[in-house]
Image: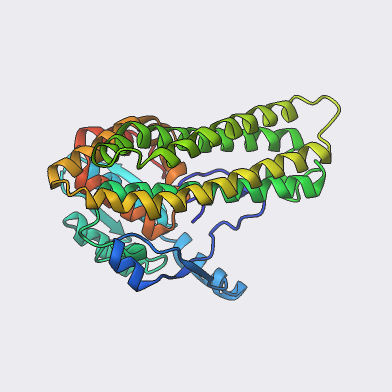
Length: 363
């Protein structure tokens, strides 16, 4: 995970995060996953980061390579391949082309082909981080799992990571007592608070639209087959909203302090983020255990499932238009590509082209 697409300082994302978050090995319960087609609560085993020597070698191997991507700028396939290359941390140069078949050039070598063929080519040329999974088997999913369930689960993953990141950042701010961060790119304490506020605004937009999507699209479907099923989840949304709004106002009050930022306010802010983190964790786990398996149990046809997913994306248009990179940053590279695969395979092309194709090209 990490800031795969932004050119901003890593410190703007979080003073405590590395530029690339170490990957995680996940151990899940095969029995539970087989019963529900949903992820069992995973035990995360952190893989130690590489040594400084290994890190330098890897950085040299990728950062000195310039990759040219040719293709129409309004093509979903071109955009998909661009996201894949950005995850590889190569120097990417996009060259608009009228040819509908995208082409990748590395040095003097040019390769054209289908989306899958070019993704395999990217994986062969730049093995790390791995992007491809031949089946959607993240955390126990399988082909029978409705796409809207996979989408919601991945959104949960992203929001969970961002909430935890904001918690760590707020704790670091409090520990420093409002003093300047070690990283000079963070700027003055006032500048850092503004960056902190911007990041929280992005998170809040994603969380609010996610809740609206569930309430308008997912919950009515489940309530139609078993009235009262979503009562607890709806109540959780009601409890989270005042806390989220309170955090936003508290950040505003800290930002306008004339006498400087003091530790007391920052520790209070960190405490509020801790409450939000605990509340979201319990809420997401409840939904994934009690509600999402029922979407498959509702026995909707493929077309109904596809319609449900597109309705959900329509409700979350703001997230996918304004903070799409932010959403993907909260996922591992494999998860981010799985999210893009879901959009490419099940979403309405006209809808997703509005937030996949109309983006600034990064050279």
